[in-house]
Length: 310
Image (cartoon, rainbow, N blue to C red):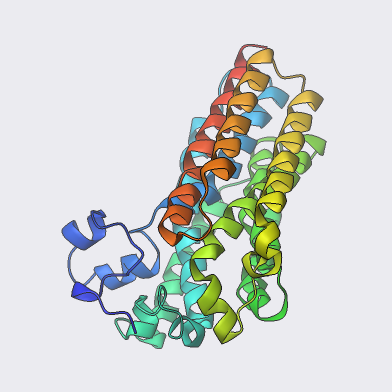
């Protein structure tokens, strides 16, 4: 088991606010919800923001709906936390066998299994309050995502493609954001969803390289193990697909030229990721993985400018 001062999680950044500012009694729960590692919240949130921004074109709005942006930000924070809590409950025995994850609150003993379940219920209750503020179609669509959330943690046990199922789950906001604005779905959010799945396949393959050796020893499957020496070729494929799907979504809605300029910048960022990535260096993999927060921001700005300056 990896031990750290004050039961800190070993892969959290040294200067995160939870370890330094949060009350001691709260820290294990904030760590369980990954509040000390906000990158996952950003990765869940960006498809939601992209979709809301894209839907502004459909409704002839100038800017994305601010109320919805705030609601989705809240929902992403608590539901990412709920997803991580559920994932850690399911994976508690596997996590104890992997160096990077053995310091997490459940396998380290900082939180009991019963307390983790109660914490999960509390987070889901907050998430439900967010969802029921949407229109009826969006509520049903949001609840449908729980099926993916429930099955995702088990995929690493039965397939080398758990990253694909993470993409299906984490990208759901690309559909839900549009539905919350329009009360329906169309080809633009579907293409956005497909692009987000491809993007997730890329960044989570990079993330999985941190645990590649330990995962192989304990029987956890991942695309990092499956692709082996061909990983960078697969990353090129996934990232090219992502940019193509995003571009197609913009083309369907006739977004302005600034969208394509921004998308070119986003493609350049992904190119940079693959070019500089050292797959044999776990710290570099984590650094490149975290840079996808910036990619999401570039795409969001590209969509907003393409909608506004058409």
